Length: 301
Image 1 (cartoon, rainbow, N blue to C red):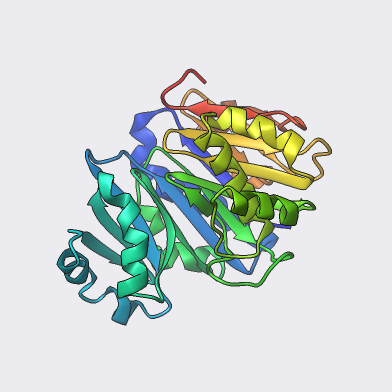
Image 2: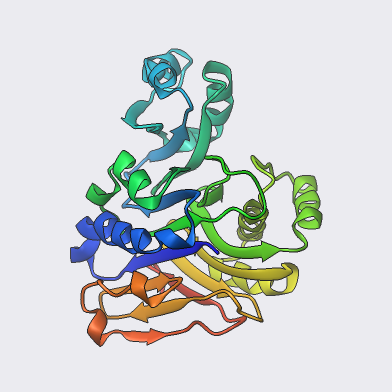
């Protein structure tokens, strides 16, 4: 029993409030998952730059002089520390170099997510504590997703927390359990995917990454998941410009959505949406089983 939230903003005037709104939504879901929590915030990309969110169990040591050491290794970088995480900004065309460099220079550092627009912050603890540690309320952006976890499939660790990110500007939060994740993991490994955990939700994220790498958009990848993923699941997925929702054909995991002219919102329960601006006039509905819901800032909703 995990808690999921998501918010896709149509009205740009709400963008400075994304972190505030998403934080309140996630805190409302605290009793659905006390183990760990995380949020992905998507913002407007800076031309020519990419962002890598990294986490360390010893941030004081690992992040000290990190920008200098990366630059000394030939990769100019700007490092902004945020508690146990750091956002590393580098040239967009050099994203492929950062993982190997961090492994060599800071072997205990792990990458939470990377891309042109996404920042991912997750840790063990309650949503309110995690949000406070990273200053999420002050963050602006275009869309975001969040998760509070009750562990069933794997250990309670930072890496095991959601969102899971397995491709540039892609991440997933999941409530449920997949029954064929071991077979899917083996197939994805043969295709070149890598994994940080034994969590079934990471397999779902990697599946979508592989499908989109083959040329599908998020909506098409989610449609394929209905045939290829077995088990119970509600997914909320983010891409650089998009936001998608999918429930399995049985749809036993709770979900509710709301849409106004200003936003699209998702919550595991309605109380996560109750304080959003204009919710009293929103179209509110329960997502249908085996139905893909997909919005994108670069396409018609």
